[in-house]
Image 1 (cartoon, rainbow, N blue to C red):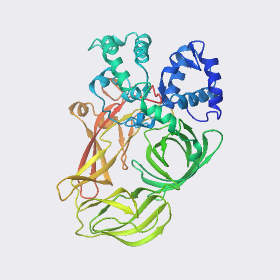
Image 2: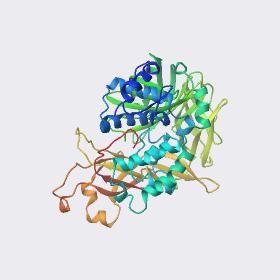
Image 3: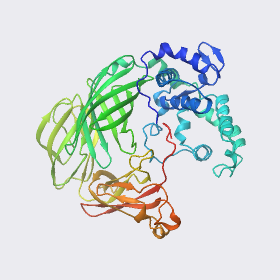
Image 4: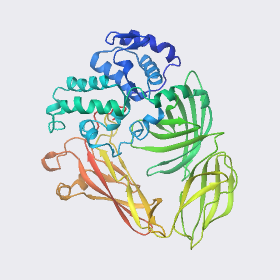
Length: 505
């Protein structure tokens, strides 16, 4: 995936000149730094990067990496998306590739069979430009109507007569959200300072710490991270970041020996999104942060306690002070540490504490919950559906792991289910169906480790398999809790390499 980083600081000044010198050969000037096609679209930074890369690959555009980054910065600032326009589809930019999309049948079948529906929803165009996009699809892939994904319908007729009006209505170029955002767009100088953060990485656990942001040239930043996982493993490192369109934060940070990318929405003194490994985007952590001066309770770690037990809890946030109120039946035995960024306490849950979720309060700050449980009613494997990919270690298409945790659920006094949290489990895989059993998928598709990480097999034909097929597989993922022994099941597809890996899938 091409990098968005290190855009030149003066993109606003250099962008118009680059559009003229690099784009005007094909795109007709329309006056006021406006050009055919280009000026009638709005996209995310990743979307503009993909457009320019396509011009390079398909139309011979000659542009340096520095100029491409500058042009992405200019276009993303001038023709981006308002924050509300990315709600619900940020998972695509954050590389949450196990997300099961929830679009209507029309969009899913007409667009989402070849790429994510989110790629469509992260663009804005007028009707004529959506029509151009339909024609581009057919011109670029002439066999599209005859492929298995399209030949169950009159694809072109439906695309032009039904999809174009619908997309122009749902994702228009001009709307109130974009008009309002252009007026209210904050400047980058609101971001420097210290940010208290919390997060969770599947199979690794909770993480917390402080991210220090220093403003450099233009909308670029120096980033330093200092924190630790719940097991004490350090989470320290540094790097750089850039801000697009007033809120789209993109960073490259090296933590230990691992290069991580940051895709956050930075709004109103908060950052939310995901950090993931540059070479293994399946290995990532959810991230939320609050800036100094913005009093905010981000998390309680861990977010559960068993009735009749004692444990240490850490409240993470910004502007913290005082002793927390953890709800009925949960008593603070001792305050271990109080800083503006974290409060550590030793707590005890009464043996007769009612099972369920309590709202945690720290003075006036609220917004996080603590679960108290006696018994575990159900176990869910998270994610419920996942894809792993065969590959070669160190090769151009490395293996894509499956990563799982066991999520415990209880039942409250009202009989309603409530989430407890992630608990330790024993992991195994089984054939998903009779075909998988007959093909010995458990033997060949890969290995489930003790920590819930599934390592797929190697790529290419396997002489030991029927018909020398590859190491694909269809598996059940089984989690058996260490506490209580309850079992939960998930579904894992092990498939071939990811040959095409665009910034927006």
